[in-house]
Structure formats: structure tokens, C-alpha cells
Length: 119
Length: 109
Image (cartoon, rainbow over all chains, first blue to last red; front, side, top):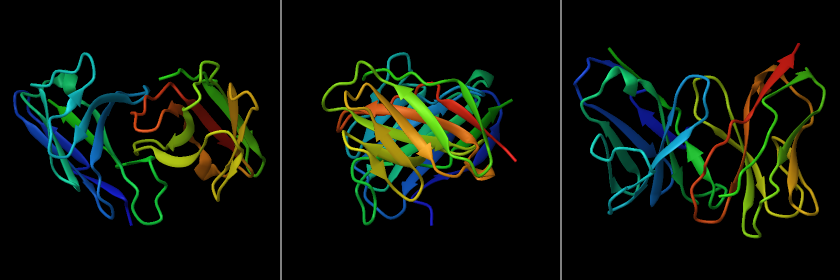
């Protein structure tokens, strides 16, 4: 089965609304999770690092008040895109770092991504 | 994190070996070399990683130059399902992954 899951896999929303994306590590505990954004035909851009029980660390240029990250448990991190606008339309991907059973220690496992379209 | 340089695109015939190069001349002693691949509309998938010695797993082999300034990902027999963007990433233990532009591999039937 999948190591890291994301929900939803795709979402369409109206401009001005907020959207929450969940990222779960299914078979290991992840003290650290990461959120990336990918525009069409471009590479992944790291947005923020999420540590369980503490505030997320955002990369330069990423608005922390717009992209709210919560890492409330060792298996769940959420990204909320607040007051979404069409320019926020993108492919959002999370990853988790952990060393569960049969997993490569200290590498990252990526979720399948969430396609956000803001109308 | 040190930067990597990869060709934008490569082609390979099906069932032939593929050698994907990566240059990382500014690599530091603690940087691991990671390879991931991404199929269209999917999250990246772990392929292989190494530090100094060559590595083999069920997916691929990783050949690391003696001076560690370059590495090569080797797919022994390319299949159509191997068509993807391949990313070579350097990372010190505990640090984040920063993705470069990667190499888009096309497999020709």
C-alpha cells in the first residue's frame, strides 16, 4: 500500500475560499513533513517544513499567513490555502521523513499530490 | 545545499540500458546523493541513494565518481514505465530536499 497519502487528490474551488489538504504517513511516524508546490512543466518548489508539535518553517517568499500548516500528530500534516486565488492553482505535494519498517532511513517519501484549481 | 546539473532530456530505446548523468562539483563531504523520479501527475518516487560507494537495488544502480563530483544513475533495461523526470538531489543528513530541473527520460518502443 501507499506509504504517504494525500486527500483530496484534486479540488476545484471558487476564488476567495479556503482549501485544506491532508497528508498522512500510513505505516510510519513522521516527525517531519514537507510541503512542495509544482507548476506545470516546472520542478518541485519547497514551501515549508512541518515539525510535529511546533510551528512550520517557511521558505523565503512563501506567505505563512496564506499557507497555514498544522502538524498535530506524528502521522498527519495539513496545508490550508487561505483565500485562494487563481494564481494559487498548482500541484501540491507533501513528503514525510521517517524510518519505519523496511523503509530507507532518512530519505523522504512523497504523497501522490493534490491538484488545486481555483476558478 | 550544493547544486546539481543534469541534461534537460534524454532518449532511450526500450530494453536498452540508460545512463543518466549528474554533475555536482560543489558537493560537500556529508552530502548524500539521492535520485528520485516523477511520473506525470504523480509525486516523486524514491529510486536510490548513496554516499561514496556504488549502490545497487532492484530499481537501478548508482555509480559515484571517485572524487564524488559526478554520479550516474543506471537503468539496466529501460521499459516504457521508466519514462519520467529523474531528479538528482544532494542532501546533508537532516536537511531538506531541494529539487533541480531534472532529466526528462523518453523511452522509445
